[in-house]
Length: 148
Image (cartoon, rainbow, N blue to C red; front, top):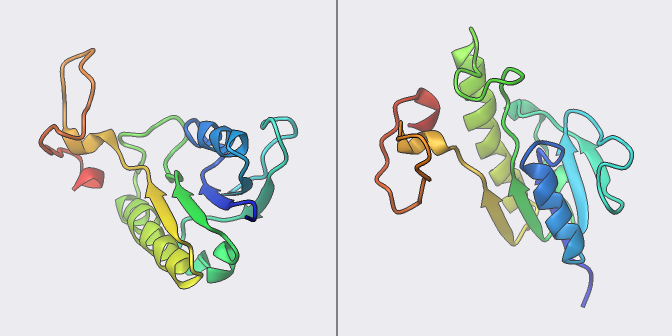
């Protein structure tokens, strides 16, 4: 059996780097897609890097050639701002995060990727009391346009 090849968009991000580490520990060959290459020593093992933005027109099937799995953990936002991360460009934010994500899924499917995992936003559950965890069984109650 050959070594599985996983692609992780946003692999250098807060959540993405843990996904990459988990895949490396499971014996996967990993390619990180992102705006910037991972700094030396960020990961416990070697990873490949391919530059990528979430602009829909920049997404290519070639990014996914030979991959078995794709984990989409990328999210384009103003630095440090997840809610309200669109700043003054709601249309661009939507284009990159919605249309760009759709373009990535289509390119992965066209390249023959067998499985895809998508990390969404907790904003789909709306406001909640401090300390209360979001659970997928909770009813959706989006209040922000990114969650609708």
